[in-house]
Image 1 (cartoon, rainbow over the protein chains, first blue to last red):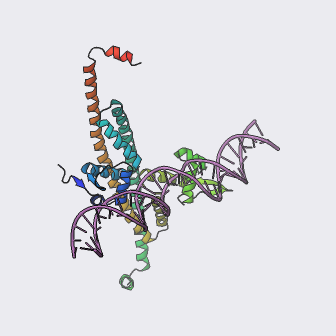
Image 2: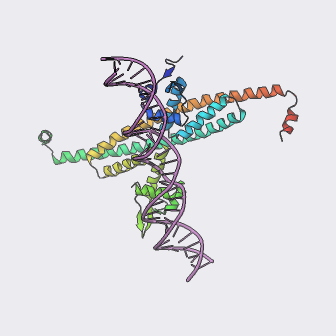
Image 3: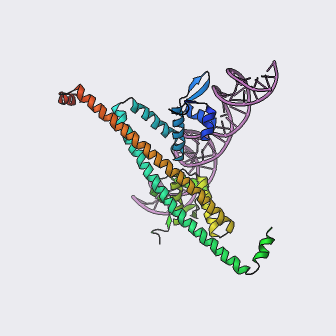
Length: 147
Length: 147
DNA sequence: AAACTACTTTACGTTTACGTAAACTTTATC
DNA sequence: GATAAAGTTTACGTAAACGTAAAGTAGTTT
């Protein structure tokens, strides 16, 4: 039911703004498994999804190895081994903890950026005041002189 | 008003669970600027804060170069140049956008982990059913045989 | 048929963020 | 005063994630 069933390497590269080199590298590391027509790679919509996940993983600070581990584990759960299923659940728990940590980090960062921005704006208005004191009535003259 | 004014390299290493090598590397890259007593490094509480920020930055996917840029810019804003202040404000804006992206990524990831976990649990209960069918009344026998 | 265009493999190079070993100094402890 | 403990510099090594030629193939447009 996808719009398209298969994709060339450069189509994916364009869509996700990565180099073909990267995509080939991801295949080399077994994160993507395109089929071949002759020697040319043909990517399925599953590959497309995985590429999207790879890139999101990167933005979230996941290594390719970590992402690959998740892919592999997920594939194994589909073949329904109990041990793998349990392992998957514990790993999901770990990842959740990671995400919680990241959310805390982000919240902290946002707060600090708020105070940083506030101080910047204060400093700016301070500068404005001083400027006006220096040139109380020559504002127009200075403005035109700046060209 | 901090508990302690100065810190040794190993104190900081322990507190933040990093190697002394890393800390020295951060100094080499000019993210930390400890003073010296003889040839021994002495870290201020400002250094401590910066180390904390470095590590949080890493968890958020920031490179050391990015973090250093922020540190430098922040220092420059303290000396009150208007141009630097404005640059700082735009960079803060960029970072905010990054954080928004990350929050979206995290939210997406959490949703997908929810469905993944659900499928795992379903698969597990399926397996439990099949087990019971295979051994409807011999449960005790199988349990003890597993040793 | 010549020239593009898109794709391929092979392989060496690069950056980041440290690890690790060697050899040395300074300070504290027995 | 030896010896351990914590610090130092110097320098080569490494893993991850690609970048960047170089050289070849396969289809197709002029």
